[in-house]
Amino acid sequence: MSLYQKVENDIKAAMLAKEKEKLEALRAIKAAFLLAKTEKGASETLSEDVELKVIQKLVKQRKESAELYKSNGRNDLSDKELFEAEVIATYLPAQLSEAEIEAEVRKVVEAVGAKGPQDMGKVMGMANKQLSGKAESRVVAQKVKEILASL
Image (cartoon, rainbow, N blue to C red; front, side):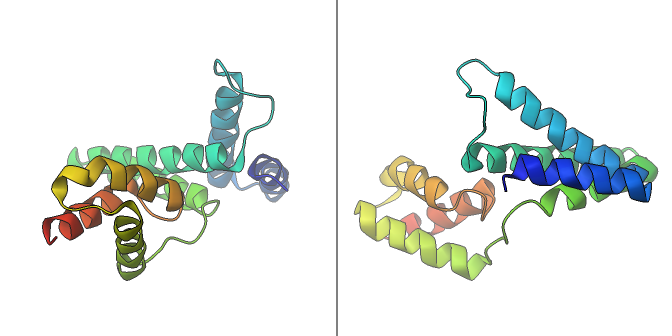
């Protein structure tokens, strides 16, 4: 079952259970999927990779919005955004720990044959492909920088 179908089923369940806040988050996912389907060059069905990228983007947006609200003293809106981020994040695969990310990045560095910081682009391209959905790009970039700096 694709993520889209899973979200559709969860929307129905949330409607029956009258879970208003959860329903809002699920509808946001569905809307983002529909937008991704209608983008130029997109196919009728989304690949799993595209679905994961959409979900990651939504979680990131919610977290950034929550930070902005919190910094402006709007804890009510911040809490709402964080709740939505949690609901949306349940559709992501389990996130890797920092040690696991570091181990994967080291494998990529060896595979690419990176010699130092000048090979950042090569390593990031391959690392982002392998760790897509399993780790935030920001954390991967940080690990890549640390490892390449130590070479």
